[in-house]
Amino acid sequence: MAREFQRGHKARISDLTAGTDLYVGVQISAPGLTFDISCFGLDADERLSDDRYFVFFNQPKSPEESIQLLGAQAGDTESFRVTLDRIPSHIRKLSFTATIDGGGQMSQIAPGHLRIVAGGEEVARYSFNGAEFSTERAVMLGDFYFKDGWRFAAVGQGFDGGLEALLKNFGGEVLEEETPAAPQQPQQPGAAPGFAPPAQAAPPPAFGAPSAPQPAPAPQPAPQGFAPPPGHTPPAPPAPAPAPGVHGAPTVIAPMTPPTGTVPPPAAPTASTAPAPAPTPYGQPPQQPSYGGRPGAPLPPGYGQQQTPYGGGQPAPPMPPGYGQAPGQQTAPYGVPQGAPQGGAGVTAALQAFKETPTGQRWTQQNKKLVRVDLGIGGQPVLARQGSMVLYQGKVDFSYKGAGFMGRVVGNATGQEMQLMRCTGQGQVFLAENSTHLHPVELQGDAICVSAENVLAFDESLQYEVRRIEGHGIPGGALFTMQFQGTGTIVVKTHGTPVVLPVTPTTFADCNAVVAWSAASQVIVSSQVRMRRNAYPGDTGESVNLQFRGAPGNFIVVQPYEV
Image (spheres, one colour):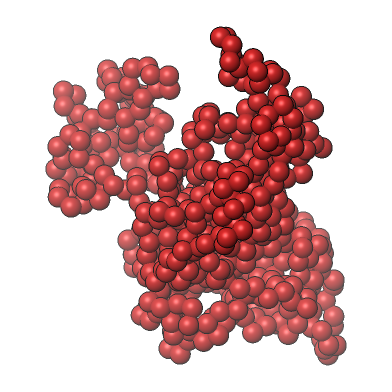
């Protein structure tokens, strides 16, 4: 029986099926609307760094065919074949998206789904409808992402700008539309297009093997257990289409306007009469070999930006004015982004580095000191430290979260009292506090111990309680911390960048610097100096430490700061 997902739900692929050769089907429709369904192969930074992994109607497969577009079949508007164990290591996420071709908005769509089929059996389904959207014209439906193994997440987040906004979100760009060329004929008659495997591969898999016997001869069994859902009929081989007009890699442009004080280069010679390259002008980076008769472009780290060597060395010379401009284009004043018009566009370019980080998950870290939570994903409230909200969008309600009489008594007695507020609604909340570093930690049934002082926010679904740390030689004979357990996310805050260390039999940490540790660790308060000696001159200030013990895999988190 297929597992039903709601927006924001996640699961390991291995918990759904043992197979790695999967069928992904998308069903989406609306009266009078046409949809383009695509798959973006993203790197670890969730960017489309290699446009060969943008799989859509003009590019139906990735280079090694780990992602293949199959077409409409078995009741699905579009379908894909994904072979997880063939995806290259630099691709860490597959985002399945749908965009409207033309006018319209996602609120008009009828009930649809994204489903995963393994071995001919449906194992997961994310159902959606127009009530979940409004004016969006592009939507991210679901993700396969790698985190200690491949996982699936039901996303359901959209963009008002359509395909262009979706591409910019993933770091791609849209080229100017050109007059479509006539479809090219296949170079090799009878060559296997689209889904067909290479000639030297094993016998073709049995796509479309029906669940009931058919008059036609039965196809051969599918390798690795891959099979589409019952009722599939093999799609007709698609005719090769023009090259895609979308790419995610920036185009390197040679400097067309010579810098001041240099001699303009002569007209581009022909390939047969090309002279030897002229010496590089003083102060400019070396040129790459020319291509097509044009001067090669310098390729320093941080293309187009002034670089400062690590360690405080002398900065590299800035790029000359006019760098990267077309011939005849007016050179902007120094300090203004090249290629951007004066006025408002310059301000936009200057603030581009601080724009909101692309989202699609419930918790998204905007920078080291700011985190965003989308309350509409998962549908559960968030508990956050009172006063930690710096911005919110949408319809969000903030209410006081009391600990009750016994909670206040325990909090006051142990020092683990948390002043919390409950955030509910259908919007996005940005959280921060005192410019501390924030670290979202996702729990999946496991537990972590964190001092209340270091907790900024967490999902209300998590269970939490005060935990006692036994010890001797200190007043009261114990210290206390908070233990969080369950499925959800907790945001831990630190002063500075923390360090995570494995637990060994000889691991000790200052109780004022330790931030968190795995709940399975055994913690003992260790007093290495007698308390009565603290009154004498020469006290080290390191009288109380925590000793950690545990099996391999346990950890502690320490910050470069003592509370």
